[in-house]
View 1 (cartoon, one colour):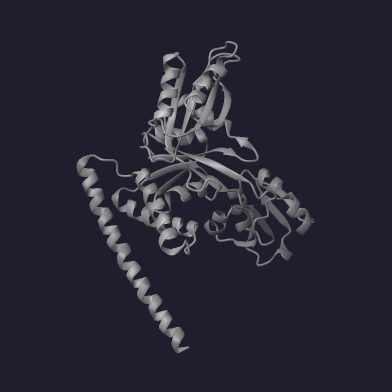
View 2 (cartoon, helix red, strand yellow):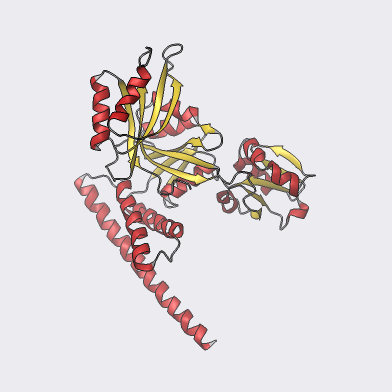
Length: 363
């Protein structure tokens, strides 16, 4: 016990030193914020944040053999940076609400807890808040590995001139949440129909006699269950601590490969980081082989296309545009040459943004 006490004192000493350094870092961040404001520079610089994350993860591997878990290290520094940024300039972030949805979780993953969040009712509202500068950034879902693309999000890029400034990919992990201490007392399960469908096998096996009730969102399911003593909700981990509900069962979804990609939209272009992705809209002529000729430009300059999705242009019947994701930044030489070639051929191109790839592309 004497040896245990010695080690605990050492832990206390280290914690006090960490606390001192955190406050020192906060003070320096405040001075940096003042210098940025005086010079008219952008307060929030996501590219710089990315450099910090990657540098620390590299040091963790090189100096300590990656002993400290990588994702835990990211989340610790996500919150440190978020708190330091808050003293420079509190960010306003709009997202597709309500709170405790997966979009809310994605926003927390990207920006941390020390920002002002604005939950809104529709994807259009997210774009509108950022477009009118009532929010600095917006967070919207764009595709899911099981259900495919969110067409409404793509359509908004045809109407608004906002830029994609980042992305985040999160795993869709569903849990059974309740006020109850155990499964035995659960009589009803509430959730959104998609969540219920993804957990049907688990429900049939573990709670075959419960009543299933559909709600407009997983968050609404949690709100209902808060008032009941015999029910549970299927929702995210964020919902569990947002609504102070017990997790009765973890990861009850059928597919282990269910991920959703979210886009961060803003009003400016991102600098090149060396690990970038570019999204754009292409309009092709209604002529035989024109799409082939358009895509050939990327092939000629060795540009890797990671996604291509067609959507109606909404200008006339049977007229389509193509949403394209490609590896690289628009300032990369090969990407620039491919786009220049298309421009010279009078192709209509709308660049939606070049931005850092998701740090954890599989959640």
